[in-house]
Image (cartoon, rainbow, N blue to C red; front, side, top):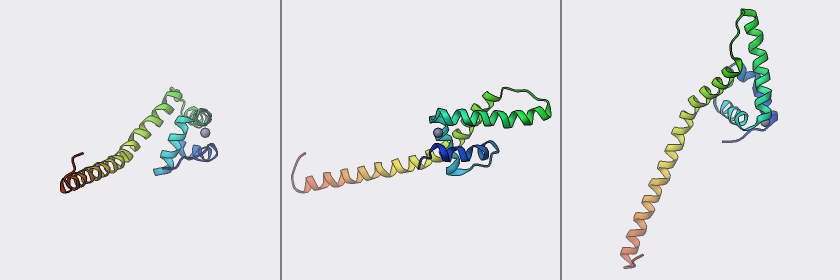
Length: 116
Ligand SMILES: [Zn+2]
């Protein structure tokens, strides 16, 4: 998984707000925003402006800041599950490799009469 820098992150801000980011790009974006206070602040401003304009037209007023946190958390949780499964498979692969080499090692030491 590659990481993106602040410039690239900024390019993804408007697509994110408009729910147009998907897949790995979305994951990279969220990961960067979570770790980078500057980008988070920038995203916050853009989100508030974009949402506020929409709300003004509809005459609504809600806790927008909280909604942005929710949006980030919910999206990341949904994606986490996808990547979590991939990680589990990789770990299982490694474990089975360890077991195989351990058994091979035991077999060889038995064969040569060596006790480790
Ligand atoms: Zn950044």
